[in-house]
Image (cartoon, rainbow, N blue to C red; front, top):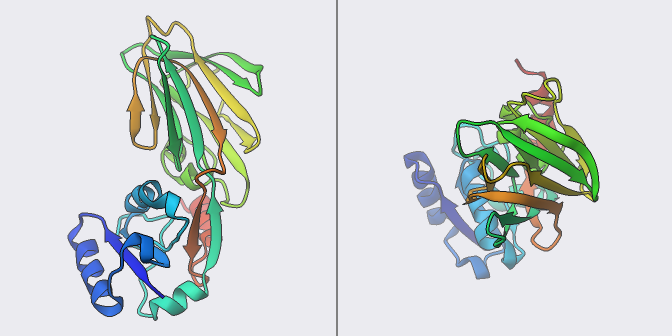
Length: 252
């Protein structure tokens, strides 16, 4: 089995990568059977964006602070671990945004698409699901749509729901909602198409970010799940992602 290792910039991750390369050798991504990101969820996310077109599985090894989507470090043979791993397919979000000059932008997000106010003024949004207006006016600092993989990232910080990876759900979560004050968001099927219109977009400027790609002065955003750039992530059977999700929801 051939591997391609890449690491984050932390000393621990760089050292771990050197040790893995010495044990298993390094291969070009195109020639590898498995991509091995070493670090935290950030390096896995970057690897998904960089190598998704290669159609290779990813086995992340945690040398970060949280590493929710990463596997724990192990002294076991790496090839044996991978052969006994569980495969999960992640579908990213496809985002299409239009700015106040009617310029169109497209991007892919494996974690979330988030809209945020650019000034001191609160943002005002209208939310449509499958062309039906579900919320006429949401006043808040921002709003995000998260995949199941991203539900433990920014979505969780915004008090959104944690989603099992196989749930085929998206989390629509407000950020510091002012009106409706008690609205905590919604869980939507991956089949839904979400359109968010920015009300008063000229007076209350808004930016949109797809993972780490930002566009400013946005007036509307359409978000939908996409199978075009889906990725395969491997999880060690001894440290299942299901257990991590349960632990995250019951720990205080």
